[in-house]
Image (tube, rainbow, N blue to C red; front, top):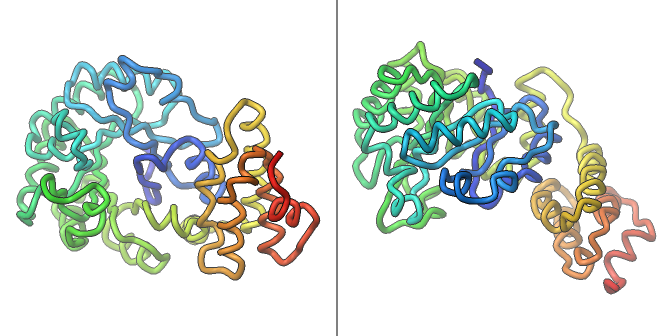
Length: 335
């Protein structure tokens, strides 16, 4: 099984294929995850729209949302057919939509059902099947709840990799956004899971925002998953990947050049530049010129041109050069 030492999180409305390509440009070794795709969307909707990805994204995992073993198995087969490296079951999303469908975080209350779902997917595909979950549900902070969940799924289904968001999921009274910040972080309980189940791969998620925090976590668990930090301060992902795997991080300019080439190909296929540029806003976070970078990549008139040269012009502006292209994109109205 592939190691999960560094991963990027499945983030609804963010972790689309353009975002994942960007994460790969920053972090060559990370496992990148799709946003959650429901079984209904794949069975009754446009499967290629949800499943297509660029080969450069490998290793890439498909996260599924659902609670019916047969449907999850069918969708896992689709994912394997499309070339994904891993299938992941969402047992952590607290949104109203998943509550209505009785999947996501709701599944933590039914570890036997989760085990049945995992077993069905494992029997359906030759690639690894993993699970992502929270530490608990609602306001009760009981380590025994998480321990029983992991023990049941590992014993009944043979699952070996558990990605643990170190917060509870509060199903009533908190929005999905608040659920990412309000329930307190309990990293010590994720570490305890690793001590109690040393034979399992335990990956910690939630609140990691620096290389120091990631390295400290890796002394206690097998891997770390980055979400909002990787998105809003995305160059940190490059620095962490390089440190963990003993390589040299690409410069921001090199990342922009790669994303420019990608954007040229995508725009030629009809992708709006906005769909790509929106993910790049955090590349210069904390650096001089970050505001100009964000302003240029968010400018409606410039984006309407669907001209990938905007990325190079914005980078030139931030890096200190001021070519005519940068001035054009800043001041000339779109045709």
